[in-house]
Amino acid sequence: MTAEKKEVLLSVRDLQVVFGERKNRFVAVNGVSFDIYRGETFGLVGESGSGKTTIGRAIIRVNPVTKGEVLYKGERISGKISGELDKKITREIQMIFQDPMASLNERAKVDYIISEGLYNIGHFSQEERKRRVEQALLDVGLLPEFASRFPHEFSGGQRQRIGIARSLIMEPEFIIADEPISALDVSIRAQVLNLLAELQRKRGLTYLFIAHDLSVMRFITDRIAVIHKGVIVELAETELLFRHPLHPYTQALLSAIPQPDPISERKKVLKVYDPSCHHYEEDPPFWEEVEPGHFVLGNHQEMEGYRAAVAQD
Ligand SMILES: Nc1ncnc2c1ncn2[C@@H]1O[C@H](COP(=O)(O)OP(=O)(O)OP(=O)(O)O)[C@@H](O)[C@H]1O
Ligand SMILES: [Mg+2]
Image (cartoon, rainbow, N blue to C red; front, side, top):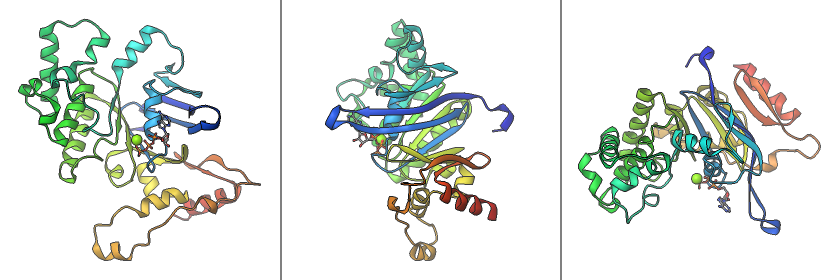
């Protein structure tokens, strides 16, 4: 993507999501901000429980936003919005869920599962609905006949394709793909990734791609944000992040990626992230751009080290 053509499609600003009340109050996401450009694949990576799905669900208005806001095409879509805008984003923003074994309604036929969203956006004749279901199945590489079957008749990979067809039928512009391949067999992961990439090319889709490790991210994302315990600690273009991982948590995630070469894999030192390495009591952390497009969270002392590391190269 060329720099001059960048148009911000989605903005998350100072987002906070809190679950529970009083003693059970739990801040799942705090002060999260990022922009996603039209046509890009923006990666969000962090360990289990770091708040990735919570952010996705806040964007599609399932989770409450306790602070901050979400803008889509420059318009606020969090909090109270008009019915008309709600309908528009229900169609244009789709989410593909983490676990295809759990996310499909077992008692409904594929036909219903795929076309369910259409009922929310307008009236379609039976023929039109059927035609769209068949087209969506074809678009994800499944047979139109599958429409009359139930989810349990399908493999994990096929079920994820059904999940993708279910979002495509809405003709979305922005798709949140929440760990779409984590639950799949290794052998079919590449197929699903290729399908997503092809759909992006053909339809100019924008993706928020969520994953808990960095291994596939390098090949599919344009930029990556790294999240730890509900807070973004680093954000950069993918190549920059892999070249100069600065935050110790990013470095730990990177060290966990398996190396193809068995010798270097054996010699590799796994880095463990220990948050007590930060001394934030007197010198609290702030968010800073240390090289163009590369942001990191750190205090003054850390920032000096980060700048030096970037300048060395
Ligand atoms: N509806 C909810 N009520 C209470 N707590 C919640 C709710 N949804 C999520 N949480 C908590 O918020 C935190 C973040 O959860 P989230 O599902 O966003 O993590 P995640 O990064 O998607 O993890 P994973 O990689 O395992 O999918 C977790 O501690 C989770 O238990
Ligand atoms: Mg999740």
